[in-house]
Image 1 (cartoon, rainbow, N blue to C red):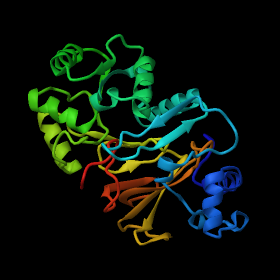
Image 2 (cartoon, helix red, strand yellow):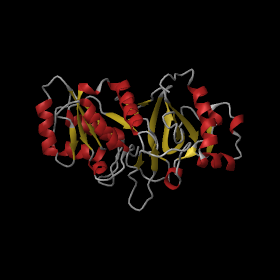
Image 3 (cartoon, rainbow, N blue to C red):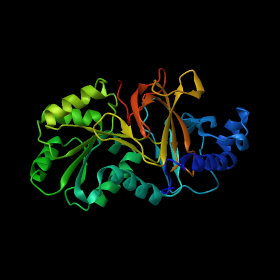
Image 4 (cartoon, rainbow, N blue to C red):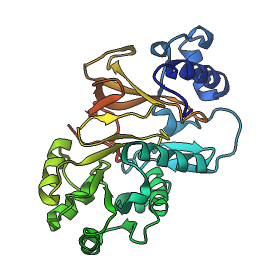
Length: 318
């Protein structure tokens, strides 16, 4: 998978599609209902993407294997959550590190300070699993999780400012706002990563408004963002431009809202994601995120498609 590049991506993706079309019972039935013949699919724009809602009601699995763990989405009270079975937890952990370090360098350069209270308060979070691995992988005695102990976190940030390592402050949006409301911090040499989500704790605001406020309170030039979800094993990152950048093993395609089989460029539409890391489940996911592609390997998130469930992991209302 890691040998993939822009020239080989489509060929690898089509081969994976045919494998999953034959060996994933849910996807196979979905394609059958659409009267799609997998052996006639030659290009990615012909591939039907599995609606993300299937992860709420079906077991999405390619082949026969026993799951090592199961990730679940946070959801909203009263709504059914998504389930993503993981065949190999060690692969997921190593993959998340490889993805992060591609953009930001070795974890050992950082003290990882995680402000993710809503995720810590439930089970099955892929984000918590990932960040826990990052904390251990940083090999820093100062790395760790914080719940609502903002005073302790502020003291830790102040104590670490003069060290040789960078601070990586990773937080859910409402918690970062709570911290910024309470403290004016100097994080000018730190990397601040927001992962979206108000979780009903605060009024939804645009990502630009969030970043502007955090920059003012944290003395930072840019705020970084992570795009990830329960149904994907890969992540995309915005390194301060507002646009998310993709790893070579991911691709985003933007579909027309009213025609999921027609794609647009430079216009807003529904986000489809190809994630080759999902080789054990389904690599072709039709999300309910609204966005548009910018340059090859870059995309912008604009919000949620009307009437879709609000999700807690990666979006603010734009």
